[in-house]
Structure formats: C-alpha cells, structure tokens
Amino acid sequence: MPRERGEKVVATNRKARHDYTIEDTYEAGIVLTGTEVKSLREGRASLVDGYAFIDGGEMWLDAVHIPEYTEGTWNNHAPRRKRKLLLHKQEIIKISHKTKEGGYTLVPLKIYFSDGRAKVELAIAKGKREYDKRQALRERQDKREADRAMASRRNLGD
Image (tube, rainbow, N blue to C red; front, side):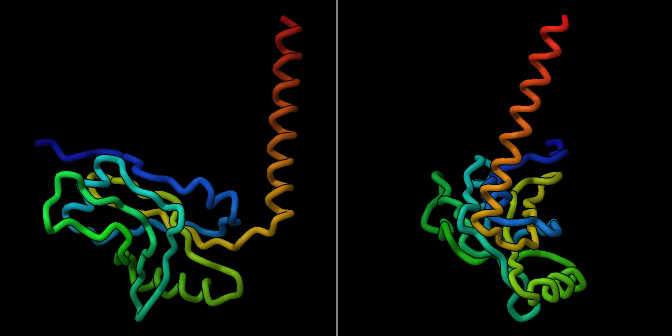
C-alpha cells in the first residue's frame, strides 16, 4: 500500500482568526489512540473550544472534540480528553516565555494529516476586543465593496 503524501485538512478553527490576533504559529504532532486516528481519517473533529497549555515541561491539547469511532468497541476513546503534543523542548520553552507575557494564549487553528501523520497547527494569540472585531469586519466589507465596484467598472469598459 503506498504511503500518503501531501496534506489533508481534517478540521479548522475559523472563529479563532476572528476572536484572536495571531502572533506566531507552530506545527506539533499529536499523541493519539487508534480509534482517534480512524475517527480523524473520517474527517470528524471540532476545535471550537480547544486550547493548549504547558504543564511540567510538556505541551497538552485540551477540550478538542474527536467523536468516538463508530466501528470501535469497548476500547473506544473519550471524545474530549487531554492529548499530548509533540514539540521540541526549545520550542516549548520559547512558547512558554511568550504565553507568560500578559494576554497571550495557545489556540489550535487546524488539525490535519501531513504525509500520513496527525498534526495540529497551534497559534500564539492575543484576544481581540469587541471594537477590534467590528473594525476588522468593516474593513473586510469595505474591501469587498471596492473590489465589486472595480469589477463592474471593468465590465462596463469591455
């Protein structure tokens, strides 16, 4: 059987980019059980409430929902359990220093398979205030209207 190649995205946290200002991103491996991997390969996961933290020099991912594998038996996994993340020690130390600064948190952006291995993209993020969210929404809407106007002007010129 040929090995998997490329990247297959399982789940993304689209709300994270709306709620947080992304400072830096990291790729980490995830320690999973067999039924969790099978459930992810079916494309089933939710990052909505997920977060990462450092405990005892190790990084953990918590509150990420990977539903039970439908074909699993009594040895199925718990859907919302703590999962260990695999990062280099220097990366964990660097992330630890950054998150100890005020207002920074670790947010998972997406879970994907890279060459057959489950990975999670983590972001060091700072929470946005309500007016920042409104301003970003307004800027996106203004850009969309400007692009629409430019396209209609181009079509009139044809």
